[in-house]
Image: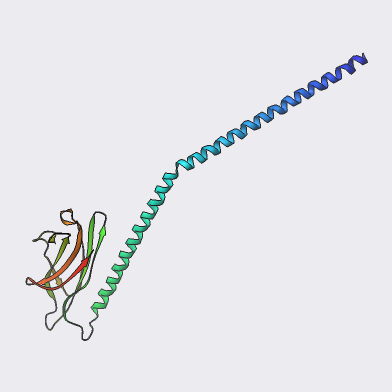
Length: 201
């Protein structure tokens, strides 16, 4: 009986070792599967990043475009503030300054699909004439063409009454789809041009 038990023990021990080895082999297979899944996930992430390269470029271009627009808007606001300061300075009379009507400022700039302009006209009284009465014309010259009044010839003559300074803004589209080369501001009184200023683009 003792001999049978001694013979049985190695068999039992061998069976235990085989079972233990199979168990460890199962754990190893499970770890390998998890590693494969992890690598597949990383590969999917890398592919998404590479595929989204164009989107990143578009986002960068869009951000740069928005920044340029903000910079241009700030530049225009700065120019407008300078003009406001000029208005206040002009309100204070200076001895020896020339009397009559004048153009203090005239600016023209491009915007998407159109042009905008801003002008400041001032008047220093001469004798008993305390206010200037006249009209303003904005004339646009395109390449290879004649000047065009804005908006039309009859409607393009805007009356102004100036006691101190007057500032106005406007917008126009290039006449006949041409390329604008020059814009002229004219201040008239009784059909006579008193003062004019041009801006080249």
